[in-house]
Length: 191
View 1 (cartoon, rainbow, N blue to C red):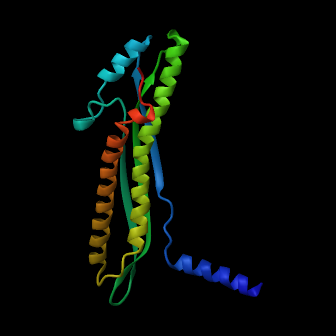
View 2 (view 1 turned 90 degrees about the vertical axis):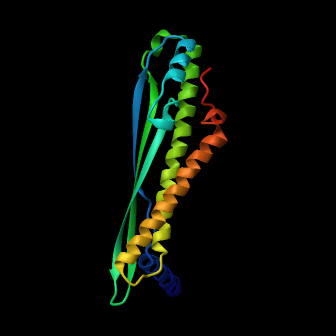
View 3 (view 1 turned 120 degrees about the vertical axis):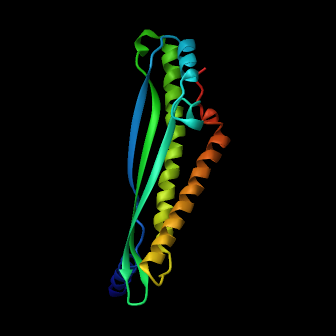
């Protein structure tokens, strides 16, 4: 029993001292733009004609944007600087259509809209998950960085690493859209 308690205490001390990464703080915000229509054809025309965002996003009816921020604290030694702690924050904004007058439509159209909206949310949340994965990886990798001679050198290394991880997950967003045909393979089809 004493050996088991000592082992558990040793593990606790090891993980506390080694700077185990925590989960990132995630702020997700859903913003909806109104869609008005009574029939399936009208809704489909509005959805297909509606462009959101700017540049490459203009042709899509919904999108997700994510941003990761990272913060770290140092352990300053007489001849080195190391990472003491890392935290990350992820902000995700989802822009989605909302059908504001479904009461005048038939049951079949309402059911198709519900399926479309659910599949669209699932697809966009897949993009948001890339931001969360990036934040977790940033925390994990920054904690593993070896000490540097100065905190300035360590800071540059942390920031370069974080930016490269974010770029990797931005590329995953593009690949995700290619693989799902922007959600079509996930059911993002109204009619």
